[in-house]
Image (cartoon, rainbow, N blue to C red; front, side, top):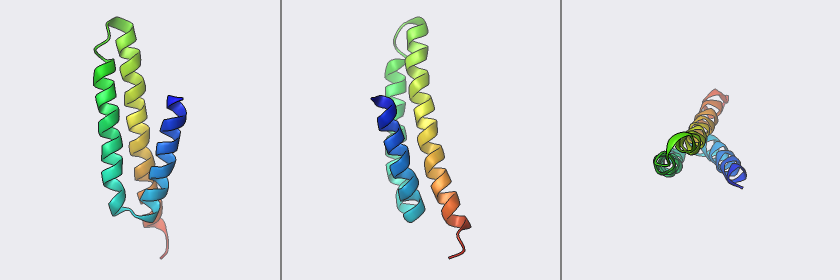
Length: 80
């Protein structure tokens, strides 16, 4: 369920970054901030479980950042 949510957020950010590059930064930062909070909370679990929880949130945050960046980069390459 969480994976589907992250994929949906990435898709929305990709489209938003392509259509409105400047206005896409605030939603991207908000999503990354929320995922960072989840990573910090998951990292407090003991041992290997904490690393696994934290890692999933970190990789999701990185995916959100990459999708926003890819949308803005694609927009800058357009001829219009």
